[in-house]
Image 1 (spheres, rainbow, N blue to C red):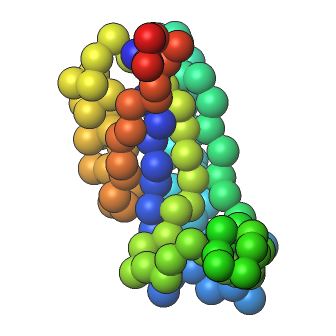
Image 2 (cartoon, rainbow, N blue to C red):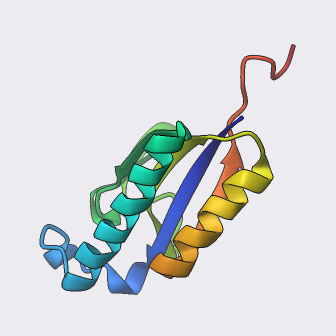
Length: 123
């Protein structure tokens, strides 16, 4: 089963003016994440991961009564913003939860696990 891991960070800790310059804390978190990624490559459970740009450079496209409109900014203003994603291929939700629990213990920020609908969905 494939799972999408969504990593969130507090919006207040991500300053748009310094988004291109990672803090020491961000570099330490990235190094810790790279260790998890290396471990998951060895087990064959890692599929992909990417960090996301600052919410200030987000574009949201939505259908309105006036037509489809593109606006600057994320879909919703939240206390936490989506910072990165990863895809794992695990035997079960329990295994994905075990992996993510370890990541959250080290990184300290919340993560969401979403099953990816496979080709069997809707058939």
